Each structure stands twice: as C-alpha cells, then as structure tokens.
Length: 192
Image (cartoon, rainbow, N blue to C red; front, side, top):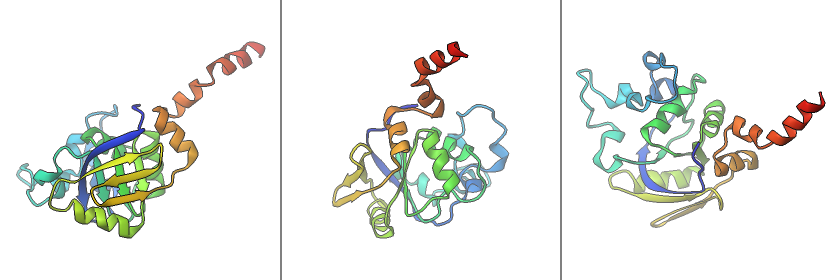
C-alpha cells in the first residue's frame, strides 16, 4: 500500500446521509476476485442513467469534481453490509481520503486496512467543506502526520487511533505490520 503522510487533493462533495455500501458498489459487480477494477462501478446506479450515459445531476459527474481524491460526505457514510469491495471501489476510483461526521464502524476499519484515510470531523466543519466544494473546485491538504486539514479559509484537526495512524503512515496492511517482526518470528520458529 502507498503511505499517506501529507495528501493534497481536490474535493468532491456528496451532501447525502446514510450512503450505504450497496450504493457505493452495487451487488452485481461483486463477482470479481481481485481488488482492482471496481472504480468504474462506483456509485453505478447513481452515476449512470438507464441508457448507460453519465447522469449530469450526480455529484461525481460534475466538472469541478473530476479527478478529486478527497470525498466529503454526510453522516453514517458506508453503512449497510460489510463488503470490503466498497473501499476497493472508492480507492480504485481515486479517493485516498474520505471526510464525514460519522462512518459505519466496519466500513471505517475496511478503509484503513486498505490504505485509505477516513476522517471523522464535527458536522459544522463538514458542512463548511460541503459548501466550499459544492459548485467549484476546492483543494485541501491533509497531514496525517500532524492530524490537520487545511484549505483556503478552512482549518481543522482530527483524531485517529495511533495503531491505524502508524499503519497508514508506513503504507502497511496487517501482513506488512507482521513482517516488521520477521526476524523475531524466524528466531521463534527455529526454537520450536
């Protein structure tokens, strides 16, 4: 996984609450066995019209949201089923950071385990970001190292569990973390 230390990117806003994993990645696209290739199906039922053309009203289809790497959304983002495919789809689409007032716990954990940074911010701060990015290109800098977010006319701090912070700063998944103790593991195995 790629480490997240300081991330600068443009913001896409999704002023919706209770966005569930069934909408993030609809069930008909869960047949793939690899972790890649899901981005094209992200929010499929919302992004596309029945004829397959992009829905011009959908947030991610707006010109100012193209190429965004930071998603700002409403309460309870990632609720619903525990499918790990949801973070895979968001990551494959290009999002590295997701900011919301709250997340479903399993979704939050799936994000950090897959190298994405979910950030819980106060609702007023999220509302500011939703407003700033609603109709125009807006950029943020997210410092995981300092746990700060900054942009034009915006500053906030956030908290994160030290365990997850270390994992993301180093680009480790749980296997990568275990491999940091490879010498100790080998020494233990030789004793057995």
